[in-house]
Image 1 (cartoon, rainbow, N blue to C red):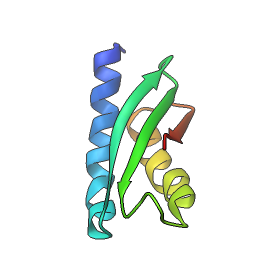
Image 2 (cartoon, helix red, strand yellow):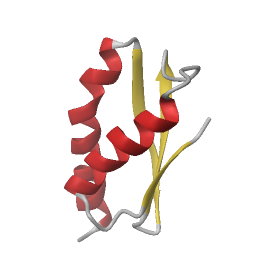
Image 3 (cartoon, helix red, strand yellow):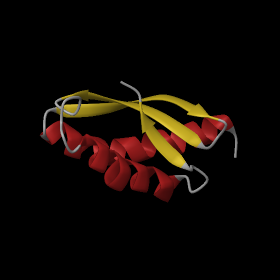
Length: 79
């Protein structure tokens, strides 16, 4: 899989989860994909100070990204 294909799959996953974040006044954007295995994202809006954002990141965002791109090992929030 090319870097461009991987990025498309990750963006597709983010598009899938974005409506849930936006309904709570937040959002998410892709920062980078390092080595084809580590996705760096930035939580935005209400998600920034949210006490459950790490749970959201792991259970929601990471799970959704791995569904679309199984080779991803982890998702990290860049503050």
